[in-house]
Length: 485
Image (cartoon, rainbow, N blue to C red; front, side, top):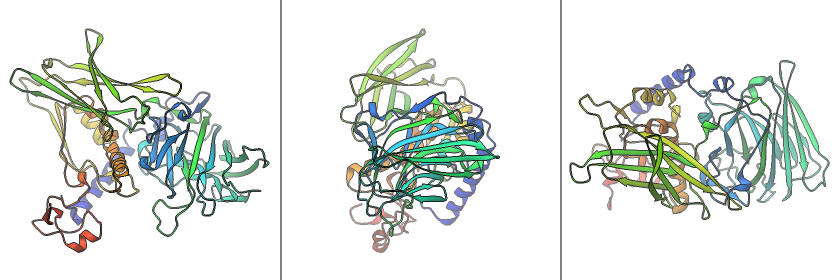
């Protein structure tokens, strides 16, 4: 499908309309809506110390980009020297500037100190939509951290007695209401005790602190800037959030089971109705479990239908069950038992409905296409489809685009290319998982789903060698017209 000007303009116009609708949607997970829900009690602590080494850092977080982060020896590390690599908390947002709060993190520079982009705690991260998932892709906010030999808090900075080098430091950011705004204080402390704690304070408007919170590697460098590459990259551990200025919403976790899709088809043969179900998790590690169990509820009791193995590249487990009882709705649940360091385990469950095959009435079908991320997570659309209770959901292509989530497209090496693709694809599932959990879903690929904007052709026009050399996937012509395609 070719992205010509009129199509792109119409998509942006539709996105703008969706944004306006989202702002007025009562069910949207905006800062204002979250402020009316549950608040953080006590202190929330990161759970990386109990997780095995792997790329995916857990259902409580979103990593930007996923392929550049990993859990290593009980902490998270950024594997890239690129700018503005961040990890957001999904279950905690700052929603009340009239209450006290604090954030703390331990940080170490794993790269060279020569070109240091800095490590920070970031608050006040909000998109135009003001929704926690959308906020994850905003690359600005109020930074509190260390940049070379300086302590930085918002627009202010001061000299430190020493640089980070390879030592471990703690960042502690505290906020309290004062004079109609928020008084912020950042304390930097060297964990080896060879530097006296240093403080920096500022007064900011209340609106500047509300929104998502994140930790950031190389916060002073743009995410894509060929002229400014850092040699630093950072390791973060022991992230702590305190204060009922934070909302707490456990339902905002995304994983380990990310989502599931299923179809129910009548073979008109000996197998009757056949259920096919796919369950996706984040990319797990060598020491993590690779099995997912499928259960169904009958008569108020859950019974197992077996387990399926996760594919180690796609991180999807598939089930095929013949002679399905298609005359009634049946609840199902997927169980993933995440193994932890020390031998313990945590069970994650994902619950949905296998809808009865429709009979003696018109079919209700929802059809969607071209989910570019201008207005991700498309909440008004997803919520309205859910209310319609469709018998079938069809995604007819372009579930992802090359630009999804930023940070470009990786085509090689294969392992990083796969993670780059999965990260973009996860945005699709993140937006429509509640639709897909309760309705049969057919998902077809189009050109952008294979990262080629003109794969199927442009009226037969040839894809020029110059366009191919540009490495752009939306160059004029069809790549399928080249020799070998």
